[in-house]
Length: 243
Ligand code: C5P
Image 1 (cartoon, rainbow, N blue to C red):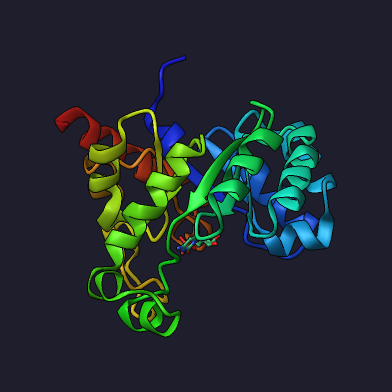
Image 2 (cartoon, protein in one colour):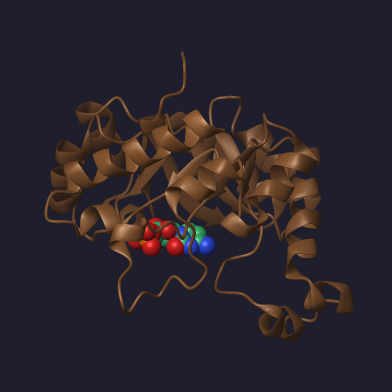
């Protein structure tokens, strides 16, 4: 199946109740490629929320659990996740290689594993405080690269990284290794007080090679969320036509 501009959009269901999540799925079905279920909703609702999304939409399902534990535990947790019919799951790539490998095996080819390289609220200071060596303190992107290499070797489907590292990831690890980018802000949605510091526009993210763009509040907080998603789709289409 050919990938369309809509398929680039991952919409996070960052709400606390099943009712709100259902409303958003109904509103945005057909306008986004995937729905992302995060910890808040999953802890509150459990697997029933995945069934709800599957019943209401044909979009993909991305479970953002950011797993990090001993290999055996992560492997077994992933087997449960694969049984839920989830397409992608996040695992911290800062764990061991064995943990990533166990996650991939637990996914049984049904659920792809995305390695979380370095959370975007980290900077040189937090990398130093965490005890990393000089090279990574000077250039946190080197840590992103190292972790992506480990994720790739373990058989992960791709990584989550900021728009700033997307080009490097695609160049280093090839077109089949997914690059998922959060912190996306269309020009028209830039808010004065935004907690996402290192933002990228949808057009820029696609032009540097991101395969999936996590876009939440610009769509959710718009007066017309489906219309906002369509505006993003048009922007992605234009960027793809120039690529
Ligand atoms: O577009 P918006 O800022 O609302 O998107 C927020 C979503 O992106 C949340 O689900 C959050 O978990 C996710 N995310 C993020 N920064 C990261 C990784 C994921 O904001 N580095």
